[in-house]
Length: 282
Ligand code: GUN
Image (cartoon, protein in one colour):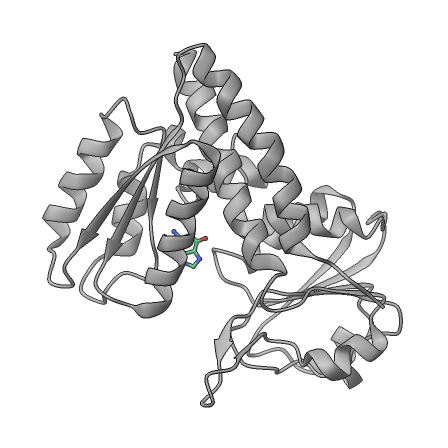
């Protein structure tokens, strides 16, 4: 069994991006990321801090807009509009989930598609569907880079994605399809989940339920990608896959932490650089 080390792979990509950011600065282009966080969800705070730190490490300008939980829809939309118009900002990221009284869809729709570094705007989602995209969503794209590390050719392989979120499951399935995999999407209503998982050459789990995929659901020699980040009552951080049993079966497996998480962040940095380059040509 081999660990798919997201920390190591992302560090390598970061070095490449750092050099690219420095070269861009020579030409007067400074990539910038605006991060909006509403309320005080502790997990969101951790993610936003990591994103800001990655910007600082790479020489990417960043600004944080931390808004109180009571922020109104109008206030949030006005902020997004002002960032759409701001030259220093090449990428806009609204950390999800938003507090319940805010309309997430309307907020995502308000982001200028060319600054939508999460690739959540319907224009970018549609472009991904037809395989003609500017940005790829950060977690699925980071996972594709990690799968590439395993050396597996996805053509014709049975890939099973557990979870159908707009952030991970759905776009992940599309990226695997683009690589000619045979893709099955499973979710909370799926019958015979264990049987389907057991047939997976590549198993991607993104459901947000601690250790729900166990070793008996994993095919011998599979590539197992764990997108989960769950805090157990004893504060231990675990994924959606039970690592101890699954790693007995898998040929390749991602750890939690240090697997998918760092890949998500480095893809966000790459998207911010891509956005800055594209905007400079306008
Ligand atoms: N919440 C969980 N994952 C993400 C992500 O990739 N982007 C944003 N904006 N919010 C998230």
